[in-house]
Image 1 (cartoon, rainbow, N blue to C red):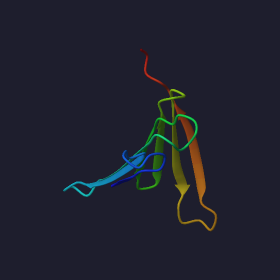
Image 2: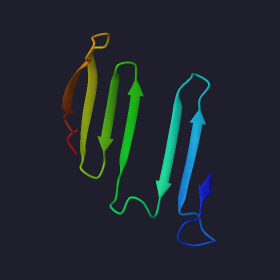
Image 3: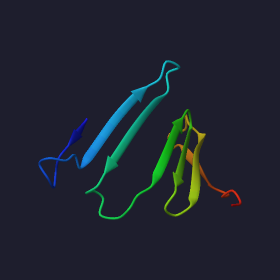
Length: 85
């Protein structure tokens, strides 16, 4: 699905939700108008873990849940090494 924002004849923001047979879901969004700075990210969510790849900054971060059932869950943050180019 998409919507025009700046012009009537062209889509400025587009979004797709893709559901795979194995249960994985991909949400893909592209925008020419928002945010005002370039964002090039891919994010992965799985049980007790979140990984964010930032292609503009060329870095990656892993956030994991150390204690999920605690009253105040504890999180671990790990910056992932970029592969050699």
